[in-house]
Amino acid sequence: TKQVTGNNVRLRGANGSSDVRHFARINCAGIEFGPVGGNIGSDQEWVDIPSLEKYYQTLIIFLLDVDKNKLLL
Image (cartoon, rainbow, N blue to C red; front, side, top):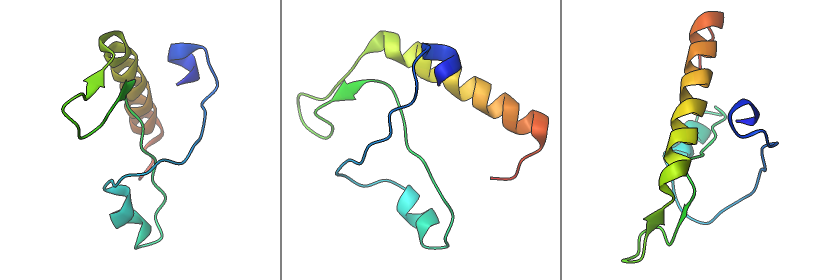
């Protein structure tokens, strides 16, 4: 993320649900991140369109690094 945004990652807790809960059941760590947005699950849900490009770039860098290092997640 820092390679794309130039900023350190901020870790924080949030209310809601995700598929990470399934990994936690078998003691496997998980992380959830995405584009900038708000009001998830409501009629006023929104996403910041320019943040979608940064999200895409971050995923590409991560996935290429995983492939290069042959890491198993």
